[in-house]
Length: 140
Image 1 (cartoon, rainbow, N blue to C red):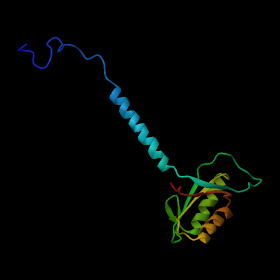
Image 2 (image 1 turned 60 degrees about the vertical axis):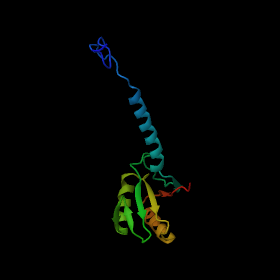
Image 3 (image 1 turned 60 degrees about the horizontal axis):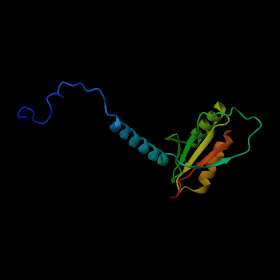
Image 4 (image 1 turned 45 degrees about the vertical axis):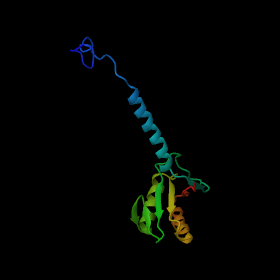
């Protein structure tokens, strides 16, 4: 017993033949739960307003929405880049030519003027995008 402190002499030469995967499964499940919870905060709901279709309806698949953001000062951002009204019209026209089923996703600041929001909707509709959604934040 004097030479065997902390373990058995016959177990030192044995090979490890198995790996305990329980900690790996635990970590994976915790990460899965974290991702599931955070994605519910990332996805925002929108009130969809679908206008009547024209007789020249295009392909049913859309390349993705044209993201338009309107600040309370009246600044217009398209896909995160500040744009003028003329640039917005050109981008909306190009999106409508690519796919007539493209949707405009309009996000306006709570303090933006109603007339400014209607003006942006009118600009987008005037360039051929007849489908749009208004981005909102859900009250808990």
